[in-house]
Every structure is written in C-alpha cells, then in structure tokens.
Length: 258
Ligand SMILES: Nc1ncnc2c1ncn2[C@@H]1O[C@H](COP(=O)(O)OP(=O)(O)OP(=O)(O)O)[C@@H](O)[C@H]1O
Image (cartoon, rainbow, N blue to C red; front, side, top):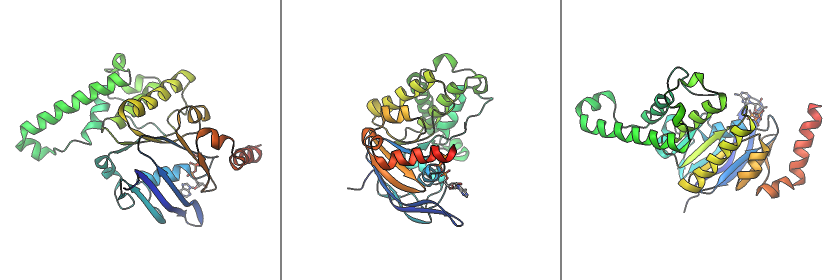
C-alpha cells in the first residue's frame, strides 16, 4: 500500500542556491506532522513544493500514490488537499459566511453553463455547500461573527476564517503555514485545540510549518527538523527536543543572530 504523503529525494534549487536538499519524509494518515527549523532552513520552500506552488528540481512527492509534482495548484483540492497561507488570504470586505462559501465554490462541480442546464443539480450543490458552511461555523465557534465583514475582525479571528476556508473543501490533508504567528496566547491555544479536534474528531491529517515550539511540542505526533535545506532529525517531539543536532542548529542560529 502506498504511503499517505511521501517525499523522496526532493531537491529544489534557486539558481546556485540549494533551498531543499535531498529530503525524504513520510506522513502517515491521521498524524499531526510538524516541520521545523531555523530561519532560512527551507521550510517554506518544502511547504510550497508539497502544495504544488513550486516544482522540485528533482525527486518525487506522492500523495496516496499520486505524483503531485506535475499537478497545477488548483488540482490539489480535488485530491483532498487544502492549505492556508502565511499572509492572510481572505476577502476583507466580504462577510465570514461569504468567505466560507467562496472556499466551497472552488470545489463545486457546476460551471455557469452546466448550472443553467442542470438547475436541479446546482441547487443541490448549493444546499450542500451551505450545510458545510454551517458545520464549519459551528466547529470553529464563529457563530457570533458570521455576518461581520472579515476586515473588521481581530487578526486571530481572520486566521480562523482562513482556516475555515481551507476546511470548506473537506480535505484529507490540511497544510498549515505558520498558522499561529502574530496571534496572542489565547488565540494560539484555540487554534491548537481546533487542530487536535480536526485530527481526533474528523481523522484529518495535518502537515504544518510552525515556529511556535509550544504548539509543536504540545500537539505534534511527529516532528521533522530541517537546517540548510537538509533533514537533520525526526521523531516524536521529545525525541527531537533531546537531539544534539537539533539543539546545535537552533543554538547556532541564535549565535549567528547575536
Ligand atoms: N523564490 C526564491 N528564490 C530564491 N531563493 C529563495 C526563494 N525562496 C526561498 N529562497 C531561499 O531559499 C532558502 C530557504 O528559504 P525558506 O523560505 O524556504 O526558509 P524557511 O525555513 O521557510 O525560513 P523562515 O523560517 O525564515 O520562513 C533561503 O536561503 C531563501 O533565501
């Protein structure tokens, strides 16, 4: 049986710079998998390779046995993969509900012409979309702000809406890019709880790039550490926290920043 998500010998060069160097990793279904490493280690590049924003220079990325390296980004939702962005990707003038509906519509099958011909099917899809939006509002506890324009909400609430948009497509694999950066402690704890619920209640697999070590250590099943584009360690949070190569990488980064 093929692995859920599997990277083999993935390398990404930008001109002369090797941002990701021969990385292999395996994400099991139902895991919360965190990718960490000092600044410039190659995390965002790896994340963008998995979400098909970049093509690897070499190597393969397989999701349930399907090669992601040749797919356009928009094809990922159809496979059951959704992502969030480091910078907010929401429509600030639209309400929370409308933002979630937009997330759903990228997933609906009906285009305008077939919508006119197959009116019944379009209506059924629309109703399903609205039901799904209600489930997400309930899950993310955003009932009280559902009709607010997203631009009027706090940063943490806006990130929650962005998470909701990614959930709209009912992904099997959710890719989270520095989800809690810029949030206060309470907002971080809320997001950590939602991520755990996604795994425990919905069986979702979560792959996250995260700088917040508190969250990484608290909720990850597996942690992979990269430095200078290479994988230097992986294992449980406790294993990587005790790994001398990891401690060196972070202390080294602190020393060079000082
Ligand atoms: N589009 C690009 N063109 C050229 N170089 C790039 C590009 N994207 C990233 N890099 C370089 O690749 C290396 C890895 O960068 P990347 O952003 O993946 O690291 P990171 O671990 O996500 O860092 P941070 O934690 O600071 O976000 C860096 O040296 C960066 O300057």
